Amino acid sequence: MNAVQSKYAAWLIHLTAWAVIFGMPLFFTGPDRPLMTGPQYVRFLLVPLSFMLVFYTNYFVLIDRYLTTRRGGRFALSNLLLILLVMVSVHLLFRYVLPPDPGHHPPADRPWQDGVRFFLGNATLYALVVGVGVAIRMTGGWYRAEAARKELEHSHTEAELQNLKSQLNPHFLFNTLNNIYSLIQLDTTRAQQAVHDLSRMLRYVLYDSSRATVPLAAEIDFLRDYIELMRIRLPRHVRLFVSLPDAPSSTPIAPLLFISLVENAFKHGVSNEKPSYITIDIHELEGQLICSIKNSRFPKSDSDRSGSGIGLSNLTRRLDMIYPGRYILEYGPADEADYRALLCIKFDEP
Image (cartoon, rainbow, N blue to C red; front, side):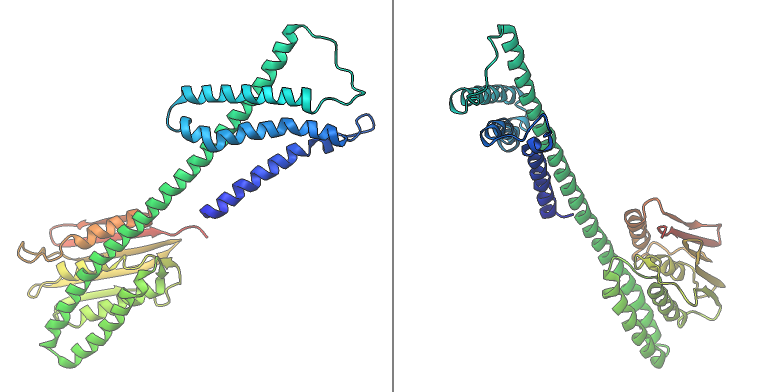
């Protein structure tokens, strides 16, 4: 519900509550309690109208002017004067402007103690009206403040996610373009095909990944294109094992979650001289999406650490924001020769 709808809903509640109060004489009729006459109903209206005056004076003026600015003493004094003024006005109206019916006989003079009790009872009713006004106004203000806070938090989260994506995409492009540049020197035809594949991947990165979620099938197709692009420049002694779903589901998932893990496997798991391997396994299992990657470990030197750490730190931050409490991310050396990464995401229950 947006702010405008909430405002209209609040005023609808106000109107309904006052309609019930003003219509009370219609609900309490019977053989021994006939319907009020016109003058009697006008006299009855003075009381709820006085309640409305006290309620909305607080609702629109006194609460904002004094209570929310922490001037409780002035708020209490203002309400004391307001209640006294309203009670005296109602009493004078009843006595001189709208006297009882001619056939009505006022009770005999009552002792002053009864008058005090009557006065205090009315004052208590007006004080309760003030309390209701404060409760409704402060509760509404809290809900509005909470809605504004959540909207600001959501906007901040969206901005941060976009910032993380803007960091990820250039990093991904940097590595991919380096691979195509190397391929041009080896095989022009295959380089042309690689450029075609890259254009399809760029379309996904620039357009599809701008959405909050994409079908899992689209993400798998993107990874398959990337892996094939990396495969064509691998040395012969590198063993590459890939297991991706042949018919992935359309389960919605945040885009570009796995590319950092896959990139790191190719970046740090391949040696141009020594035997190397990369194993990539992505599958769905019992409401979870599991990405398991293993590769030989060839840490880069300090002079060759372009983009190092950016992808994994961004991935961790995105997972914290999108799947809080619903993911497992583990990565690091398994031993001196091997490196492992595991990402498990639990989907929402249908």
